[in-house]
Length: 299
Image 1: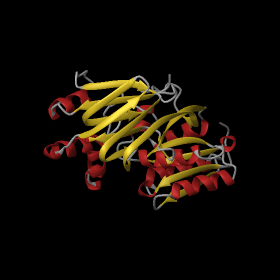
Image 2: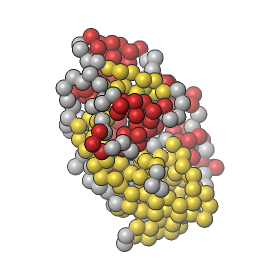
Image 3: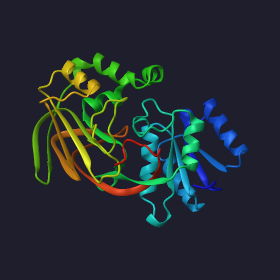
Image 4: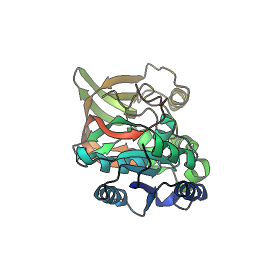
């Protein structure tokens, strides 16, 4: 993409004052890139900035933050008129950066911004939940939801993605499975699930490959269910080492319905969504994203 006078960078407030980010933006501006920077303070800011970028005919919006920020920006872009959707770049600034890591986005801010400003946009899928919510990477239930929503911020800041695993071990005796039913065309499962992963991307919770075969441009969801009769040590071994287990069900689907007699929480790229029923479907080629040419999540 040529240098654009309408490139927006939407930065999560937590990473806005990172010296490496400020230096990278300054350096790029000195090179002639005209970059508009917006900083989020509360939920909803990213969506408002996306609307502002569209009004200014932006060709590119760069999401600077973790998985939650990327989700919020992507969800706002996909709801714009398809004829005026800017492409999305990624500047990883979060704790786990699961989506960016799996896509092999550079960790260094300058290199990530160079990719976003000069790469070729690729059409990728998103996933719609209950007709109004979206995720770009993964929805998790059970163990994954509890750990990622309850891990203390100080622990995440100190240890990064490893903090999720550490907190999971310390909370092992409080884990409770979700009793639920998952249905789709030619698929039905009902039982107690310790972990549910519904992946557009392949990893969550700080680098655990819950859906290792997922691709973000194949029009498919990867469903992974770890049944509750699996022990926690075996669970952790399976997640960390990518081992097969007779207690893990894996399926490729383009849509599914998850129901439960009790209120469940699905974690959509870090944002919890409560309910008794979730209708989940792929939106093929929903947005255009600037990714490395060798991105392993592309078919």
